[in-house]
Picture (cartoon, rainbow, N blue to C red):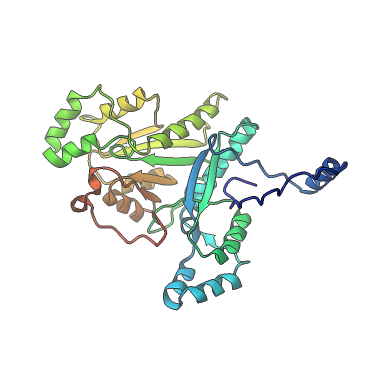
Length: 325
């Protein structure tokens, strides 16, 4: 079973070898050799970088959702059963997951026995009868995907290099500095960051993901493939390089982490720069920046953490499709 395939529980006793079957191993080997290619073994959860993603981000299900909204669940299920052999069209997260699988292929080539890879898990709240069509679609493309906000338009992204972009405060770092901006303004913020330049910020919710990406990057570096590494990371922050960027970089250094590029925008919109970088996914805590990324064709994920999540601070944005988070 490949990482990303839907898993079903094993029945008690199922899979056990019969006690009196002297030629079982020979027969088992014969049938395994009939398959043209043996599928990679699923990694243990504790060894892999697990990414859980929704079916409606992986596949486009607009027509199905219209039927559900206008005609109800019975007609929705009937439609899915009638079309269960027709794969869904790729959704906005499809290129992101293709890039994850490309990294996995390279890792397996370099480290055949390692389980330190991406394990992609499909998450869905669809009716059980839709499961067959989802499985057929996964088998058709061979992958599953992530839970994200859809961009306003499609933009081509790399199919051989995974690119992940992170905001800094309240994403990689805590919202300590962001709280000062909200409460006291930019001048006080600049003073605070200068005074605490050598004091690392506390970690934010996505620090662990950057850590996991860095661990996988180092596996390529150790093989002399730094310039050809199929993973590239970006820090895209509203901080200014001159006045507050040093603390962000020194914090990453104190953690033993780095990003391939650090982009300090000094409050400028992030969307146009993201359009140039073309990451597979961009993480930000502020809806304003998520919406700006969407408008420029970037697949963006909102991080619901920090002071920006209070109702009076949250900027309006386009309604996300049901099932996206």
